[in-house]
Image 1 (cartoon, rainbow, N blue to C red):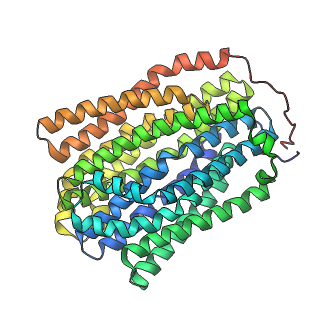
Image 2 (image 1 turned 30 degrees about the vertical axis):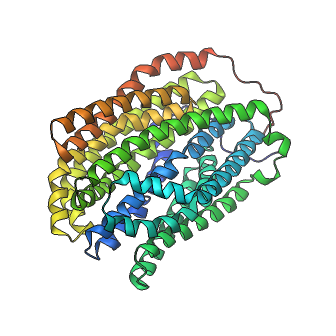
Image 3 (image 1 turned 90 degrees about the horizontal axis):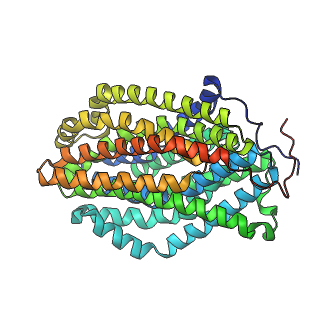
Length: 459
């Protein structure tokens, strides 16, 4: 095998971090359009129940798909380490396992859609009017699961190689198709919530097809990987361990988000709709930060693969600095520009007034999320997934305690936002405390065996 997954690791610099982060920042800024366009188009219909349905639908599918976001994150971390170790054959083996796992898990979700729907609707606590619209949306969009999860493997492989420019291409293509079809189906054809769901389904299928073409152009041949390589016991154990840890970590994160959404829904359709508007605002900020987390995944993973402790420390420090700087900037922009954003998303006066009331707390969330985003990228690149899982569970316990306190005090939606900000802060604090020990342990261990390694041309 002679294809080149990426260039060999270099000592990280501000320019290198920005070169990796900015394409994915641009890609990620467009990603909330999947929820934002649907909310904006449905919001123009002037029905709070319909807006609540599309908002809950977005949360449910975030919960489902983010639960398996381990496929992207683990693939990116493992691929980056293989690139750092200059093992081109392993890059393709990792990719093949990820695509196969994503497709199989997605098909299983489609088969289990009815019990999943019943559980999700029960947990949501939404009104009958919201549930009626949500059911239509859910049973169409769930069909996108195999495409979404297989695409996670494709995207993770691209990012682990340091080709965030191609990650930008894939994400923008998916989002543009989704935006165009949502406008056409909902406003043009009058399909309502069904049109919004169908648009997302078509966009995800198109994204997977494009991703496979991109990988072929990179020289990857995942479908030619021998079956015996996919069944390698040691590689499977490592892959499964990393994925399981990240899945459990993600489930804990989703639990926090679902609790936030469900407790908000119990306060009425107007509060639910207002929180959905503010949540989209937070997500836009979060995806800015995620660009630097992606840079950390790539640079830290490649440094671990190359056994370069100095490069790892440098990549970690730069990622943290950029995330904290952007967290402050995004929080200020959210506070100052939030009223205009709210008015654009919804025409409902009660929803506008309620969203404005909670905007100051929502604007704190990006700042509190800055350190966790940076550390997530660092931990994933280093495959410190067991520690990441355990620290997330600790932060979730803090979140539960704060929620119990604020609800007992009758703080309502204000308490929900306070608890969520505390959860984000606890995550960053725990990860910072654990970092030095994990760093020492990683570079004290001997490098993995080079048996069977190919020597790709990295020129």
